[in-house]
Length: 337
Image 1 (tube, helix red, strand yellow):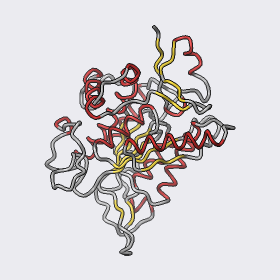
Image 2 (cartoon, one colour):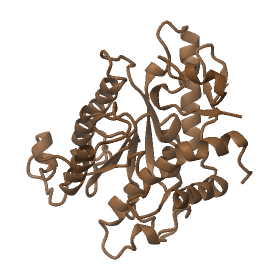
Image 3 (tube, helix red, strand yellow):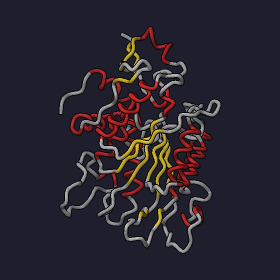
Image 4 (tube, one colour):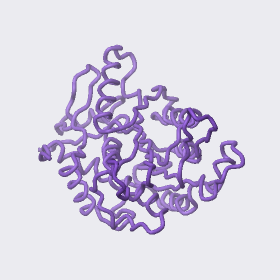
């Protein structure tokens, strides 16, 4: 694999650290549910996915004959984009949510269509199964949370089954909608022409933002409440079966219908497994060099032209504006010299 460019090296810590820690929560959640499996820290993260036809043991979080499925909110850019690549490397089936609000209102149709084409093509190159665009409608100052919730609800209504959701949007309403989606166990059918779709085991929700996106640095109360949600497997109804939640009846839901909760905060020095920032960055760098998991170094502007994510210091004030490069999960590095 080729070496990293200077732009990639600059963006790697910003995007890769939280993406890696978030993906590790998925590995921990599902590998710990299997008896006789080694703990996540004993796993070789860089091991290639078992995509062949041999009968070797699958990676820790998968089961034989079953590949887990994840939805990454705003998985087209920034931290979400790196998480998508990491999950694909581990053999996950990944759906990428893209906020259509990334294209400002009154943009020419050809620019909007080009944006959709470029984003979808890029996600397919990473190995994503599908790309889901939301309606792009924002309610007041919700910063796209309403549109993300509508995507989650529509997926559940359509009968889609997911094992995990990675949230890069934040907010209590996103968590509530994702929990309902993850509690949905799927449906069985007696029709031989339609395969039965059932989720195996618990679900996992991991957020990078938490319940209060307006607070970048969480308070002690925020951390305490997040810890309680994690300990009781989600909400107060976390032990309810999927049948009780979604109206099903007569299904065996023992151990099912539960949703694990994890908050990977930007303020954390040490991750869930005790690794500090330097150790995590070392793992991210190995993934970048060995597996080609790279951060995005350009973006598609309103004028249809690609723009760099590295900007000079004198342009820094123009980053924090409506529809700027930080909108909808984007990442930018300011060069001070």
